[in-house]
Length: 79
Image (cartoon, rainbow, N blue to C red):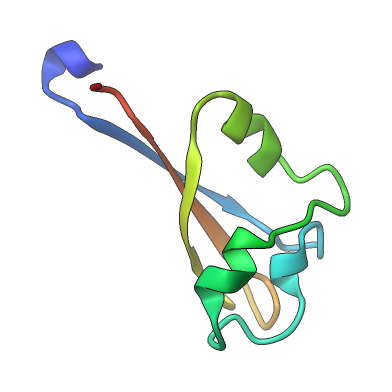
């Protein structure tokens, strides 16, 4: 993809079933701390994506309902 001019891959991975600690509490309060302290409770795929080189770059609180965030991840294609 980098050959075609793309520099970054982005993905969103929902937490609709309380699979991470990001589904607890209010993500509008100190979201960056909560991202840095994320815990995986039920095999959420964000850890798989991390192994593939993606990092968490943000969250969309309540994107899928109250307490159901979307976790945004990205991977650079150029170094």
